[in-house]
Amino acid sequence: MIDRFYTETVTVKRQTKKTDVDGNKYSEFETVGTITGHLQQARAELAESLAMDLTKSFSLWCAVGADVEAGDSLTIDSASYSVRAVQENSVGGNQHLELVIEKNED
Image 1 (tube, one colour):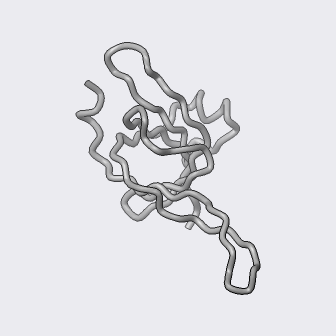
Image 2 (image 1 turned 30 degrees about the horizontal axis):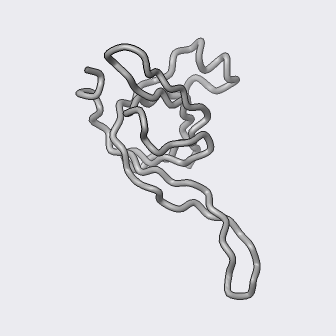
Image 3 (image 1 turned 90 degrees about the horizontal axis):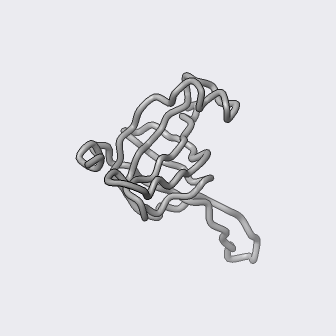
Protein backbone atom coordinates (compact mmCIF):
# COMPACT_ATOMS: atom_id res chain seq x y z
CA MET A 1 0.00 0.00 0.00
CA ILE A 2 1.08 3.57 -0.69
CA ASP A 3 0.60 4.63 2.95
CA ARG A 4 3.84 2.91 4.01
CA PHE A 5 5.62 5.82 2.28
CA TYR A 6 3.83 8.43 4.42
CA THR A 7 6.93 9.43 6.38
CA GLU A 8 6.59 13.25 6.49
CA THR A 9 4.69 14.90 9.35
CA VAL A 10 2.69 17.83 8.00
CA THR A 11 1.00 20.63 9.96
CA VAL A 12 -2.13 21.92 8.23
CA LYS A 13 -3.24 25.53 8.74
CA ARG A 14 -6.41 27.12 7.35
CA GLN A 15 -7.37 30.77 7.07
CA THR A 16 -10.17 31.64 9.48
CA LYS A 17 -12.12 34.84 10.06
CA LYS A 18 -11.87 36.43 13.49
CA THR A 19 -13.22 39.50 15.27
CA ASP A 20 -11.08 41.45 17.73
CA VAL A 21 -12.32 43.01 20.99
CA ASP A 22 -13.20 46.25 19.16
CA GLY A 23 -15.38 44.43 16.61
CA ASN A 24 -12.84 44.65 13.76
CA LYS A 25 -12.77 41.64 11.47
CA TYR A 26 -9.52 40.04 10.33
CA SER A 27 -8.25 36.69 9.15
CA GLU A 28 -5.37 34.49 10.22
CA PHE A 29 -4.10 30.98 9.62
CA GLU A 30 -5.05 28.58 12.39
CA THR A 31 -3.76 25.04 12.84
CA VAL A 32 -6.47 22.49 12.01
CA GLY A 33 -4.37 19.37 12.55
CA THR A 34 -1.49 17.24 11.39
CA ILE A 35 -1.29 14.53 8.76
CA THR A 36 1.40 12.27 7.39
CA GLY A 37 2.31 12.09 3.74
CA HIS A 38 4.93 11.51 1.07
CA LEU A 39 6.55 14.61 -0.51
CA GLN A 40 8.05 14.56 -3.99
CA GLN A 41 9.07 17.11 -6.64
CA ALA A 42 6.15 17.64 -9.04
CA ARG A 43 6.31 16.37 -12.59
CA ALA A 44 7.25 19.06 -15.10
CA GLU A 45 3.95 18.58 -16.99
CA LEU A 46 1.91 19.10 -13.82
CA ALA A 47 3.73 22.29 -12.85
CA GLU A 48 3.44 23.62 -16.40
CA SER A 49 -0.29 22.85 -16.62
CA LEU A 50 -0.91 24.92 -13.46
CA ALA A 51 1.48 27.72 -14.51
CA MET A 52 3.69 26.98 -11.52
CA ASP A 53 7.47 27.29 -11.16
CA LEU A 54 8.94 23.78 -11.42
CA THR A 55 11.55 24.44 -8.72
CA LYS A 56 8.83 25.29 -6.18
CA SER A 57 6.20 22.70 -7.19
CA PHE A 58 5.69 19.50 -5.24
CA SER A 59 3.19 16.68 -4.88
CA LEU A 60 2.20 15.40 -1.47
CA TRP A 61 0.37 12.09 -1.18
CA CYS A 62 -1.71 11.45 1.94
CA ALA A 63 -4.69 9.42 3.11
CA VAL A 64 -8.16 9.87 1.63
CA GLY A 65 -10.19 11.79 4.17
CA ALA A 66 -7.30 13.95 5.38
CA ASP A 67 -8.56 17.41 6.35
CA VAL A 68 -6.77 19.41 3.63
CA GLU A 69 -8.25 21.96 1.20
CA ALA A 70 -6.97 24.15 -1.61
CA GLY A 71 -5.76 27.38 -0.01
CA ASP A 72 -4.46 25.71 3.15
CA SER A 73 -0.91 26.31 4.34
CA LEU A 74 1.31 23.32 5.13
CA THR A 75 4.48 23.18 7.21
CA ILE A 76 6.92 20.35 6.51
CA ASP A 77 10.33 20.35 8.23
CA SER A 78 10.02 24.10 8.96
CA ALA A 79 9.35 24.91 5.27
CA SER A 80 6.01 26.47 4.32
CA TYR A 81 3.88 25.38 1.34
CA SER A 82 0.55 26.51 -0.14
CA VAL A 83 -1.99 23.95 -1.34
CA ARG A 84 -2.91 24.75 -4.95
CA ALA A 85 -5.07 21.69 -5.77
CA VAL A 86 -6.42 18.50 -4.20
CA GLN A 87 -7.07 15.38 -6.29
CA GLU A 88 -8.79 12.36 -4.74
CA ASN A 89 -7.74 9.01 -6.18
CA SER A 90 -10.22 6.63 -4.57
CA VAL A 91 -10.17 3.71 -7.00
CA GLY A 92 -8.08 0.58 -6.60
CA GLY A 93 -5.75 -0.61 -3.87
CA ASN A 94 -3.76 2.62 -3.44
CA GLN A 95 -6.45 5.11 -2.54
CA HIS A 96 -4.99 8.50 -1.60
CA LEU A 97 -5.16 12.25 -2.00
CA GLU A 98 -2.62 13.95 -4.23
CA LEU A 99 -1.99 17.52 -3.18
CA VAL A 100 -0.31 19.91 -5.59
CA ILE A 101 1.64 22.30 -3.39
CA GLU A 102 3.98 25.22 -3.94
CA LYS A 103 6.91 26.06 -1.67
CA ASN A 104 6.62 29.56 -0.25
CA GLU A 105 9.54 32.00 -0.40
CA ASP A 106 10.83 32.75 3.08
